[in-house]
Amino acid sequence: MKKLLLTYVLFLASVGVFAQFSIGAMAGFNGGLYNEKPKINTTALLPTFHAGITAELGFNDMYSLQSGIQLNGRGTAIEHKDHHDDIGIFTLDIPVLFTIRKSGFFIAAGPGIGYAISGSAHSHDASGAEKEEEIKFGSNAGELNPLSFNIQARLGYELKNGVFFQGGYLADLTNWSNASGSTVRFPLFQLGIGYRYKM
Image 1: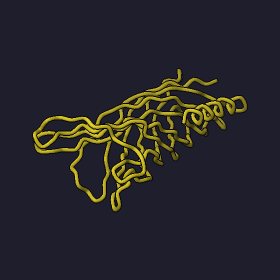
Image 2: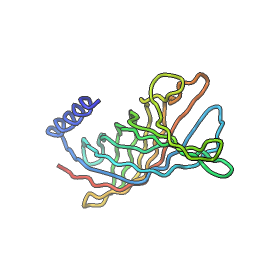
Image 3: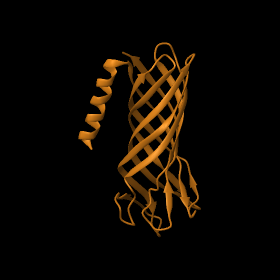
């Protein structure tokens, strides 16, 4: 995985020699959501965060192709009568977004791939005592798929000094669950701030 990420970063840097190129960084709030079929739990938004680096290849002043590596917090809060349990997952996501810019405003959309690097479940047992369990990733029925494919969209505004503000949404295309007849997805929405440096 480390070699793949390094190769990807070097490729983006080499492409920048031959076109309009910019790099940047961003961070902000993630609202973790949860979709399951059949529906069993009552869930609520889980607040978490995102942080990452971006690289953008510009075809002209209006159209560009944007990518990068982003650490995303995902998950949900499962509601009970007197408490709630949390499922928290961190993924590394690599999107490829077609971007349109006009008068400071921009919109970007495209596919992405994610890989889960950690996860934990905070819950309560029958006596009410709290417990923390590590989420296991793999291909077995009691595990979650570590690899996911998604589609992302972002809308924002960039100042002349390169600082930008954006909101976004990530929707899973693949199933996280390995259990037969079960579908689990962890979509999220984002609010963030960043900086883009034109090289």
